[in-house]
Image (tube, rainbow over all chains, first blue to last red; front, side, top):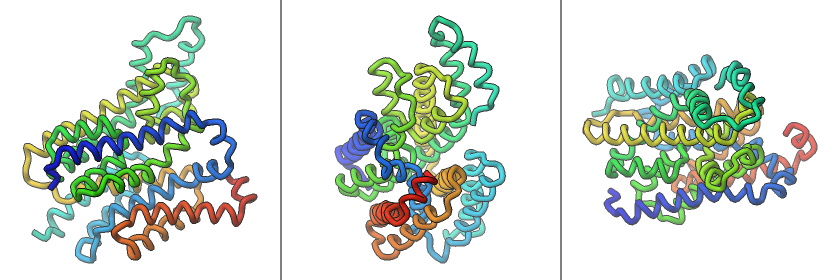
Length: 109
Length: 249
């Protein structure tokens, strides 16, 4: 467990600095960025791929024993979002289903 | 996100000679931010609960959300911190996860924000949600102040949600099983929205393959391997079919 306050503060500071640099510096280098077709191509195609990768990353711990509640919650989230296009509803709905299944039918405790 | 009537109602402000009053900018920003706020606040609560369940004091939830202020990275960061991940890898993860923000400079209306402090804060809080709201069609007439207020309100919703979640999570020791799915659901929602904007199947398919390859070949470095593979794959795809892809983009 992370008792080390210095380490946590450093991790937060590093993350904040990297994030702000990524958000601020491109404005200084705006002109060359605008001219680069390759960066424009990446800017158009990266977002969806990054989100797919992050989705899979959050599911890396899923095994056969908990695949069913996770799969059902994924279907509910996807279905809700394609149906209503309401981010709050999709996230809350999918999470509620997962919490309900994981703590009742599929509870391992 | 915003109803078309917002734009119509706000046009008169833009036509007057005097700069719009701050109070009207705040009111407008409150309305502009309501849809995103409805998502940020409960997600903030989920993050706060995760922070205390990871063994951190409740106030770390406030500190992390206020200083890092990049939703998806913060959820990952809690896990990285709990695993005592080396700082270099934390930095690399922050870089790769948030690299997409580089592209927001291409269309975010920073030129409308006048003051230096305003510009600094505006870039600091240039989240996916802020970018999505301020580059939409109804946002074309928004003043710089209205944009900064919108960003400030979004950050308030997020920090307040996380703080409440952490306090609530600390008071209620019984762990709510399966709450971590909120992060997965958020990424699924963002992926669907990004897909619907382009409707380009090969890109998410390539990303899925990269993620699965990284998951089974390099499970210890999955995120970095997947994002690196995906970027290389995109560049290769562009090199193979530059004309067709340039036309599409």
